Image 1 (cartoon, rainbow, N blue to C red):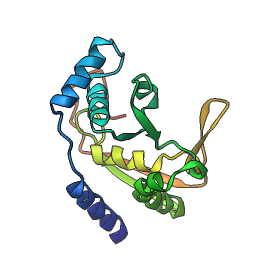
Image 2 (image 1 turned 30 degrees about the vertical axis):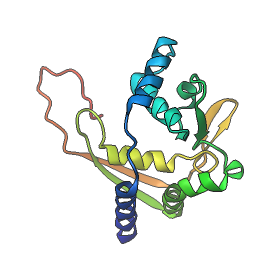
Image 3 (image 1 turned 135 degrees about the vertical axis):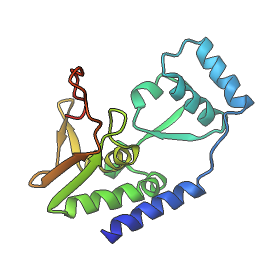
Amino acid sequence: MARGYTLLLETLNGFEKAPVLPFDATAIAMFDEMRSQKVRVATMDLRIAAIAISNNLILLARNTGDFSKITNLIIEADFTPPEALSPELRSHLKLSDELVDEFLAADRCLFSVPMYNFSVPSNFKAYIDQIVRVGRTFTFENGQGKGLVSGKKVIFIGGGFNMLTIADKADYAN
């Protein structure tokens, strides 16, 4: 348990040190140019791409389907098979590797997660994003995802749900 909190603290401290790049005039101009070309990508993804291009950066993303529609954008996917990882990309995945190792070493996993605004908290989503890794926890077979983890007992406890009125027909928690 203490190791999990240590990793959480390291992650938060890492965010503290990460620079936040502005959506400045150069990025806005790039964004406007891509919009005028009618690139069919969500607005926020287009902004991310504009910032990356205007700063000559490599974008590390899982959303290669949308981002690949943008010319001049260099993408590295964190779905890259382990044997194809560059040293730089491997360093970006250090925390993910630690969390996957911890998950794979556990015989049982207990997740106690509330539901907020019809979804789970963002930190739980971020954890899932860290442990869903090609070649480690899943693979592709015939174009379909296939899990690589088996024999684990996973217990998921939901809590903090809003009480639904009788008039509500949708149960978003289940």
